[in-house]
Image 1 (cartoon, one colour):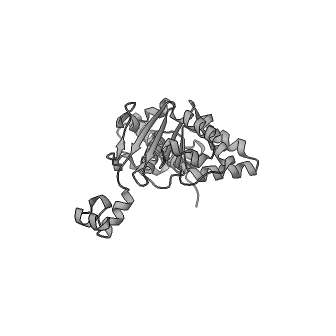
Image 2 (image 1 turned 60 degrees about the horizontal axis):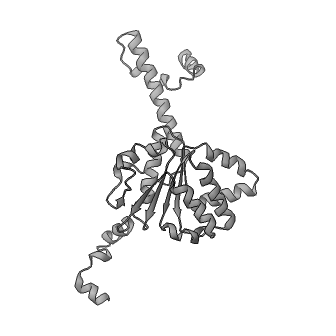
Length: 257
């Protein structure tokens, strides 16, 4: 089947979406028609760019700020919900550290902020901490660590999720530190952890390395405290018809003790 001259011209001009929309746009005058055709092309390009940024970021799920429950979060005096949602910290190359118990929404917020950044045209990558370290170690083994580090240094936002679940090998801890050190005052980093800072040495395995990592992260950082019951635990107990531990009546609590 022959390709129409219009499609050939659009292909040559890299107007991939015009052939899909030009028949659906009402014509009033030439300028209005061309304006709406080109606006539709630009809008489709922007939507495609956002999809590519989200796909490349490697998020484990799609989460939004509209779905996020701020109730368990204590914000520092240095920031507000609106400033976080408006990604002011990325403009300033500042960090966000989300610390608290498992299941309280830390990853949800990190992903939601990352997706919001992608929607605004920012380049983002999401790694679980252990996955990032393993990726760095494998790149080092294959002789392409410098290229990977260079790629990471060009991002607007690096998200490191679940720091604290698994102790890191010394070489891996050093590579993680290098990522944070290179990002310092040049990029923004979001870290989620179920550990308080005083426990991070159990993950990094070296007190001086831990201190240097924390020093670079907390300078220009917004530290968010997450408290309360695990969302997943509450949902599981609710589905089973049970009550969370803090909702058990005094009589049952006395029996349990």
